[in-house]
Image 1 (cartoon, rainbow, N blue to C red):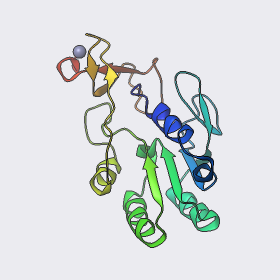
Image 2: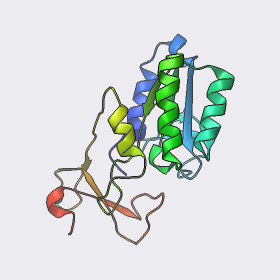
Image 3: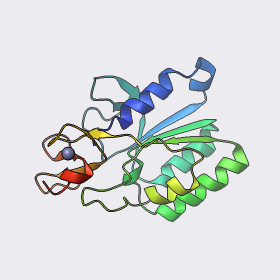
Image 4: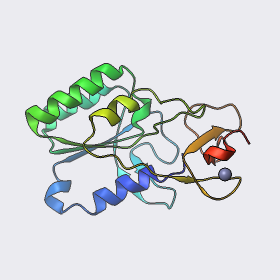
Length: 169
Ligand SMILES: [Zn+2]
């Protein structure tokens, strides 16, 4: 949860020239309202306006309506009906030449592949795997553990970063 995925999306947005920004749609899952309902927020306080949606079909309908060149989606692991989203992205990418920039967790807090994310990784042209900080040894980690039984959206009260060596600590 603390690997800087939202910061990465915001950085990507900030580095785009204006004409690219004007043809970009930014989405977030409505379950993620940790900081604000209508923006992606980083832990360092930066925000990027985003459309909160509940299902991938809402993303599809807005793409058809707005004809974007770039689509960014944060917390993509929360979207269900994965076959629909993965197939849609594959089709619309080639038919409309849309670039998707997706951020999400590849593993849940039990260490298992997270929902549709493995399928999205398989069809991606490039993947950036971010690391968090292990709260036990302070070395880079790739795991997140639930510390209060919560498995939904949460912050430091619910989740702790871990390296592979300390995932059971
Ligand atoms: Zn560790």
